[in-house]
Length: 450
Image (cartoon, rainbow, N blue to C red; front, side):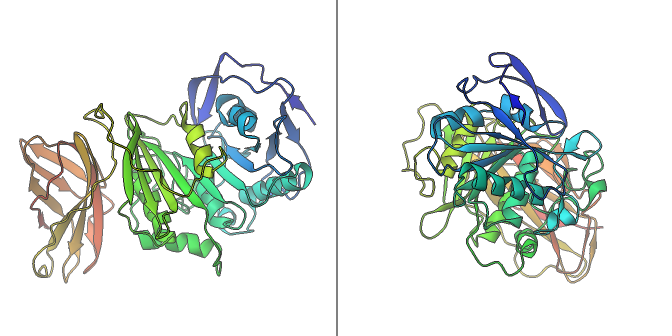
């Protein structure tokens, strides 16, 4: 086995994230006596992956296990050096497994979340290799099988969703940074940015469709599902911010939860959090929108929040913290979403054949801005192309639209269908979303179709 010392402590290192090289400060290394160790022959390895493991000097007899996964073009040792999970392991006594992906995806080695084998429990490829690593850590390091967690950035965040869907009996919880919903990619050709429907800004499925994908990954499973924490930057264009909402829809549906958060807040400036708790108060889904952040997560301090969500810092991760007074300093006016109760303006009566109708709801709101969603519904005949128009309230400006094309003149706004969602079958529907400055309102929408 090869021992790798953290020789870059205190310097800057290049962290490969989703095919991008992001320069980040290397973090203070763990105690000199502990080091990253490569493990060979760890078991069934259809993905041909490499395994590295970090075991802190001080840990309980049966430590928790965290699987921490890099972005495209990265490696396990690179993610060890460029993230805070190892230094937190020194503090809290858990083991960290760092897998290295070997699948080529056109712009570096990435975790396989696209193949048919990777979408079926026990189907092969990277997911089976990762489970083998977990089993090895349990057998050779005394890892606690009841406290196994997954986390990762970009490609690793995508694989986090993947592992929770395929192996809900192995993983207790996960934290996905800049990931996508499970089964978002159709195949290998759909994976690279620029040609991907998943990450090309056109992905829009219903919560039921997303939830069904997870349930189909392990047919007949009726046991508990792993809790999930989701992170995304509002300025991410490589893995679009709109996919955070799709991810939320998937996991709230899996848990049978409303898409209306049970709690929302701003834990710190620029971090807007939505929590979705079940009837017992357990937060099953937690989503962070990071103001102005591009494809560069996790940033400093975020790994610690993920570890707290797992409950590995000694806190109770399942119960929402007490509501605190609003911060004395309001978030910037361009802050990304937290949440306000949804509002809508349902159409009156049934739309005529060949016509369309549109309904609005506020997904999130914060001081100085909000996130809205519009559902476009066909009448008794198919719609081939649609345009939704409304008038902005005082102080409102639309800053970003997805699944549609924006036109604005003064306070008059129109959104036309994109190339991929203009055709709607009879009684079918599609949605588009937007971010806006100002306070949310309940606009009167009109929908026209050629």
